Amino acid sequence: MFVLTLISTYWVGGWKGEGSVDPFLMIAGLALDFVHPVFLIVPILLYDITRRRFGRVAALIALPVYWIGFEYLHSTGDFSFPWLSLYNTQTYNRIFIQFIELTGSYGISLVVLLSNILFYSIIRFNFIAGKKFGAVDSVTGIKKYARAKLIAAVIALFIIPYTYGILEDNFFHYGGKTLAITIVQPNINPWDKWSAGTESITDSMERATRTAIKASTINADLVLWPETAITYPITLPWKQNDLRNLYRFIDEIGKPILTGIPDREEYLQGKDQIPSDAKKTSNPQLFHRDWNSAVLFGKDFSGRPYFERYHKQKLVPFGEKVPLVDDLPFLDNFFQWGVGISSWNTGEGYPLFRFAYKGQSITAPDSARLCTMICYESVYPSYVRAFVKQGAELITIITNDGWYGKSSGPIQHNQYAVLRAIENRRCVVRSANTGISSVIDTRGRIIDEKPLFESTSITARVPLLSEQTLYTKHGDYIAIPCEWVSGAMLLFFLVTWILRKSKSKMKGQDETIAN
Image 1 (cartoon, rainbow, N blue to C red):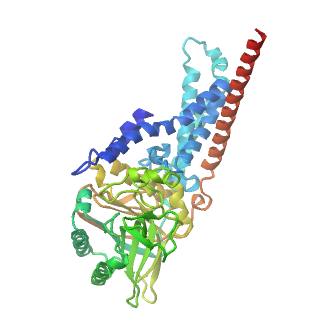
Image 2: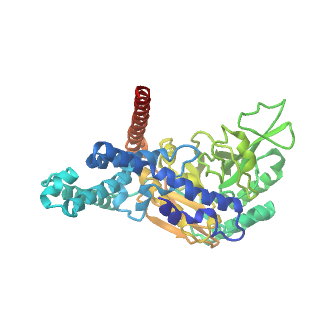
Image 3: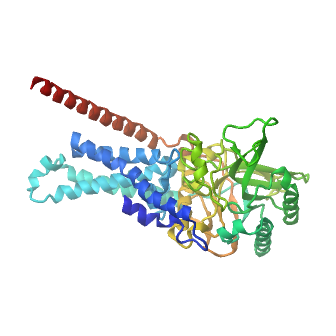
């Protein structure tokens, strides 16, 4: 598991980044390589204990339950990191994975595990070193006549998903309202973003947007900027002049802008009610909360400005939030970055962006309901699903993967969005600061994507859909029971181990007394 983690996520330390390399990011990457395998090994340990206690067949039956249960568990809590979940291995196998609209991505993990277990059983059935063919039953617990059934089960695990995928891929047509969206990929060095002046960064974004709009033959209804495209909390009262300038730009282009910003709220002691998660400033009477945020800035049809906010909730361990800092606040003093990443506050709820636009209607405006995942959040199946269940008609993703250079990290991140599109049957539009920006349809096809480290854009018209899949409606009905059973078995093994130790200790004491 250490080798798997090292090969798959070698880029997390930021060694491949363009420009500076931050020592803290490097330390966090090394910590991941050593800590993450501890979580991955848990289902294997449970399998081994079950094999020793109840035999190999029982352990093989239990393995998918353990594995999926701990995949789900590892997507919760401050140390969550579902990047290397088994279902992520199949993002290029697009036709095969169409069934996850019924099961969610954990259905992929189940099929992969069952296929491997059945292959293993077939191989062990035929090739048992030093054993005659008739001894198979005593070694594996599988009767000879089961071979045909095992082979049939393996074939079915391939044929059924592919058949379902072919039917789904060829007999679906869009209908209804659409949204035209311009995705801006500015390609700004992430280190420069936090050292350059705020005005120069905003000017760069505006220039890139003007270029994108001029280059497109489609009149967009919305402009999508990447994560922290605006590098300061523009909504604060003392930034009103900057906010007015942004609205003037929105007037110029005639389109709302959905962008990432660091959002902040400030509280004065004695005047405001100070939330429990607010942090102190150098002024002992002033407190604040900061969020990595997405904000929709626009003007309604009467010309009145408005903005809607979403605060990121799935924060990268150490990079964006120190694990357990809510319970141990002093940890926050040891981990602070100087590049716009630190110990953010955690957002709440499942807010959607709702806005009216002219669209293709002549008599009345259309309306859209969007959800925005900020960077790392897009790798959480159940989290994205919650927004779609609330009514999101389109999934947008904003990210800044420039820290990781030309590595496999940004490619993996883009591919994982394929799963979110298929699970919920929603189009995904993705704006990445240095790439990969992309448009993905509801069948997981990447309609358009832009390469890493190019200043470019995409303008596309995508459907807004409201019908919900079985997975969207009912959630992780495969993974959650597996988590319960795995937890119960872990508790059972722990209790029996304690009882055996206690019994052995008492027996030893009795023998000592007798002597």
